[in-house]
Length: 144
Image (cartoon, rainbow, N blue to C red; front, side, top):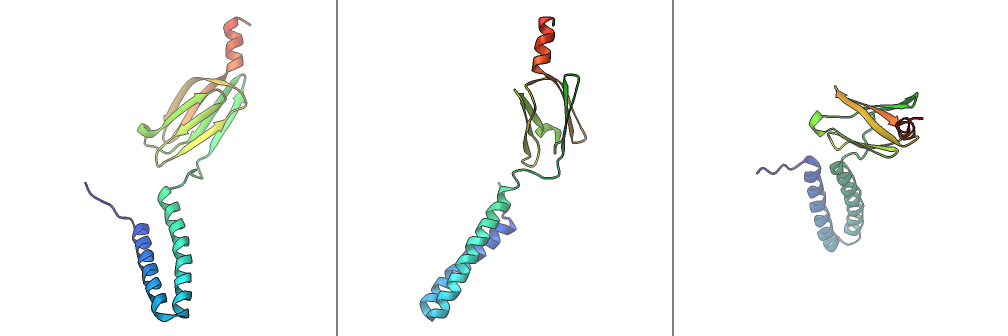
């Protein structure tokens, strides 16, 4: 099992080391040490937050468009979802479609009404869903 240490973690450890040295300097140099320690503490908190954000990754990847269109009781959803195909999943629940893909991609799409899935396809990073409005499907099943 190999351990991979990323550059942000190395920077974080360096900052924490400098912070420790600053505290020692504060004890030995008086007012100048206190000022430097304060600056390093502020920088340490800033960089800690930035490194944490970088390691968490984006919650919503920008640049992945979604198109929803409606025609004669059918709703089409076309979305760019990063792959690979084995990591692409979707779930239709009521009036929402939940998408999941590679690199931590997640998206929730709110639709104008309750729907049922008719068919789906995923080709070259594009997910196509064909959905029927639930009220249209129910009225056809009743014979109306």
